[in-house]
Image 1 (cartoon, rainbow, N blue to C red):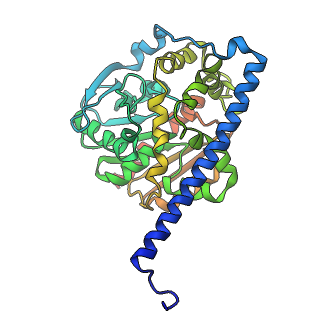
Image 2: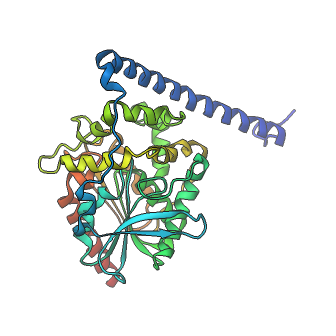
Image 3: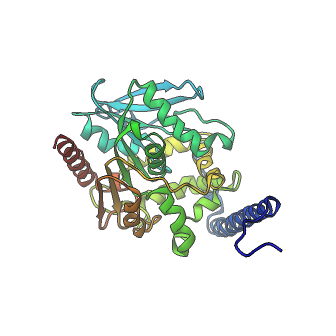
Amino acid sequence: MARPGAACPPPARRVMVAARALLFWALVYSYCGVCACIAGLRLLWSIGRRPGETFRWVVRENPPSCLNDPSLGTHCYVRIKDSGLRFHYVAAGERGKPLMLLLHGFPEFWYSWRHQLREFKSEYRVVALDLRGYGETDAPPHKENYKLDCLIADIKDILESLGYNKCVLIGHDWGGMIAWLVAICYPEMVTKLIVVNFPHPSVFTEYILRHPSQLIKSGYYFFFQMPWFPEFMFTLNDFKVLKSLFTSQATGIGRKGCRLTAEDIEAYLYVFSQPGALTGPINHYRTIFSCLPLQHHEVIMPTLLLWGERDAFMEVEMAEITRIYVKNHFRLTILSEASHWLQQDQPDIVNKLIWTFLKEETKRKRE
């Protein structure tokens, strides 16, 4: 008989690991099924109320003029060696200046950084990227091509392809998760890290397991595990879900003067109404559970975390917990009455906070 506390023999350990994995995936797909049922009920409700409108959606043939606004920068492309993928980005500021690399969230694209492209081009080469699968960047067809290690490698390879070996890295939402992981995996490439409305990944995975309220708010992570149905739901009523995310009282930008204009909305509709345009972005989420658990790695560079307190998708308590994973100067600023779309919701305040952080760190380094 084995002594209490003795190590399990290899066969028993393998059984335990397999049982845990089975339980984990059973829970993931059970919650996925619940979310799918809720989506199905909403679909039936929409059909019952507006049968003719429900399945109507329009592909926008021509981009709105705001996407070609020269004040935002120049549209560029770079093909990276390892994957062979071509990435689209918009760049502002002179070549040779320090690089500021901007990573957007979901469902966004480079345009979500328009206020920062204009603001920081005086002192930085500002590059707002379309992530893998988004916008004009190549979208590999298989979901396995969207695992986190591929997304992290993309940023490293893009940095090198642009002729830089380090940058100020800024990420929002899903782009914030990627920014955290790049800072962990390639700390020598990130001089300063700025994240908007996304906690350290380890905080997120631990918190969601202990707080059912966050699990509910993150239900779309589970719903997106289904093939094709999430994309279909986004197209209903001419992309009503997409519009609501940015404009509704519950989830949208509420600050007067900063709400998305009709042309801004058309910019998003132009990008995501293209055939197959939603599959790449949603594939980012379809691989997330196979990448868990995330290791408890620390960040060693100066870090600024900005948070909109009215975030409908991320609970603000995670922001403060993130502090324990930063082994350098850490600044957290929570903006009341600000939504999840913080850099678009309160661009002037966000830009000022970023400038203050960057200048403080430059002064701190000199001292």
